[in-house]
Structure formats: C-alpha cells, structure tokens
Length: 183
Length: 134
Image (cartoon, rainbow over all chains, first blue to last red; front, side, top):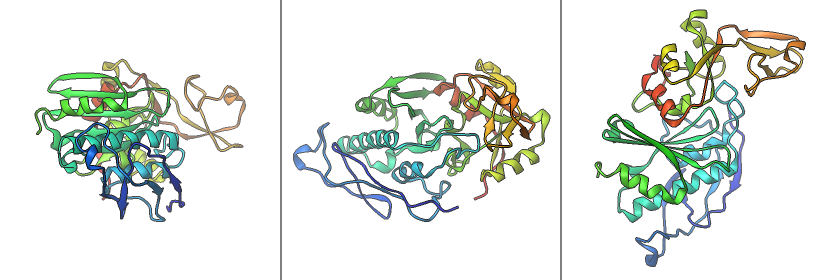
C-alpha cells in the first residue's frame, strides 16, 4: 500500500526541529537560553510523508513515528480506529519537544531518553518508556484524541502504579522520576 | 484473540504495548467460536500479521465485560453495523431493519474503561500467539 503525499506545516513557536533524512539531525539554540526552561530552537518542522509505506516494524525514530501517524487511514487497526488529526499530532509534537528540551537541560543523551511511540486503538498516542531500557521504572504517557482532555500518565515501579493527568510543561517532573534510578 | 497493528508492537523486544488495549470497546475474536488460524486469516486481510490472546478472567479481573457481537456489514452501505450495544461507535439504531451480512461470527468486545493501568495489564499479560512477520 502506498501512502499519499501529505505536506503540512506546524506552528512550532516554542520549538522546532530540523530533520535530515527524517531524523532529528540538527538543532540550534541561543546560547543565552542554554539550561533554562525556555530553551528555544530555530527552525521549522514540516510534515512530509514519503511515497513509500512507513515501516512501523523497523523504524523506532519517535519523530518519524509521530509524523506518520497522520498517514494512518480510518480503521487502520482493522477494528474501526479513528484517524489521527493534525491538532492532536501538534500536541504530541509539543510534548516531544518538551522531552527533547529536557534531555538538553539535563545534559542527557537523547538516545537514552527517547520514547517508543505507538498509535492507540482509541485514537490516543502512546509515549512509552518501558522494557529492557527501563528495567526499574516505567512511564507511559497518552496524548488523547480529544483536545479538551488532559494528558495522561502511568508511572510503574516494582508493583506500584500511579496514574493521573498533567499538562505538557510538567513532563520534566515525570522524567525526573523515571530517571531517578536510571542515570 | 486480538490482532495487532505493527505500530502497536515493540519489535525490538517482541512484545505488544498498551496501545493495542486502550479501546473501551476492544474488539476480539472469541476463541471458543473460532480457531487461531481463522482469526489470523481474517487479520491478514486487514494487513495485520500478529495475533495476541487474553484470558476472559483477566478481563473480568479488571472489571470489564465480554460481549459476543458478531461483525455485521450493511449490504447497501458497506458499513459496519453494531446492533448489540447502543454505546458502541458502530451502533445503528435502524440496524435491524437493514440487510446485514455477518462477516465474523466470532467477534466480541471487551467493554469497559481502559485506564492506562488496565491497558498495561493487558499488554503485560497478553500472550502473543502469532508473532509478526519481519
């Protein structure tokens, strides 16, 4: 199956990402912003999908997975799952940007930090930190399809679970918790 | 049994993620009404190539209900029609007055609020019956 070409522009006023061959390849920021919560990036993100079907199995690049959520058609899961719409994708990219900023502010290599992105059958977008990379603590964040609904999180450590809601700016607190024993 | 979309499966670690189990009306094939092979063949028609299974008691443990609701397609409109549950997104009030064709008599729904915790529970406890082809 070939995907149709989709091009769209995001308003990334607080952060934007340059990419080369689909990967986040270059970031530039003002030195004066370094280490602050108001880190800015200068570039623009374009949602451009290729004519080749996205390889959900091999491609774990979170940026590309987020981008290609928009190529999934109605009932993409075979069970009537809804399409992902741009406002929700923008919200997910904002969260992704906050996570990237977190890695910069904490001076953590992003390869240690990047989440696994997965489309949910109810239309939400999953950011997951779990599995072998995170053996002590796990974190899941859901970006719901309804824009008025808050972001959801699930923290897991041993047999303890805690779930709740938060706003995107508070993701640092969750990541601090996640990496308390990992870094 | 539930088909998995490749994007919902962590291929590095060969495990399903919570993303596959978040739907409040979670479609499944009831194992007592079909076979793994039949379910897999249906899934392949929808470009899915993996099947995971859950035990009914695991759904009950998380306050879910399991309902048998065969997949019905409206002959005229070609759309999915649920005639079982008014809250289902495929429910059609005039469903019974339409000419319907049953395409999956083993279809059922695991109904209930899938909190993040519940979805994770299913992901952790699901048994992958057929792994995705890589």
